[in-house]
Length: 290
Image (cartoon, rainbow, N blue to C red; front, top):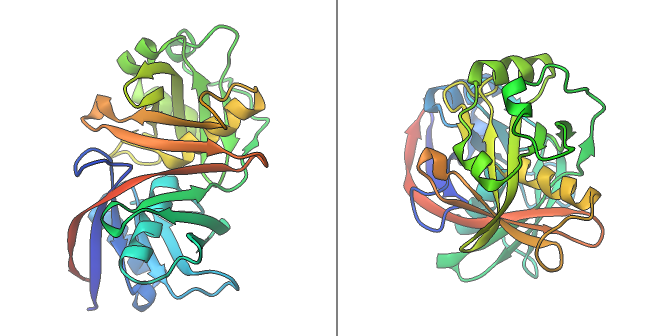
């Protein structure tokens, strides 16, 4: 049995308890892939990351990302949390404020800024691509809430989300989805889940997002705050020349419907790269025996 340092972080959170929990296992090279998967299932968080020695040229640190049921090539809040942990725990030192994360999706650029007690992370999402999958199995009740002229589109950046803008922020906030229908649709189209969104003029944000993944994470059918889905929404907006804010920057609010208050900073640069970021809080710092 190995004794490993373990952190539990709250990602996209201005204060503990408002973001998306993340398990972080350091020195995970002592674990096999099956042990990592079993530990992620036991922890039963939406994702757990495991740090390994970097093996790719140019990588500052290396992570693997597991849900309770499978390994992911990329996920947003685990990547942002891992970057925070790499810097805070001394596993990697930024060079001129930048790092490179190695994961199954490749080498991802990271920006780290601010004082140690208020470190902010921005991570470049893998390139987004729209898939040709038709939304034939989309639940009718969800389609009835769509913004005028809009239909669901399946996008992929390592995670695969159906994206659908709803008619207004109230429709997003009040949505009570049929989780069984969303799970069936996700399974039928090999999707992570469904993300809905709308403009919202709020304090500190201009967009509201909710993400549902009952097939991928049955124990967490609504993800509190979702980096990958927010990154894809940024790409969706860029495709339509509809980015709000200045210089392709905006803040999305997510999680209030499940008792959180996450804030995701989104920036789409001139090259079309989508950066996601925010604050991270450390809630648990200890050891795990596995």
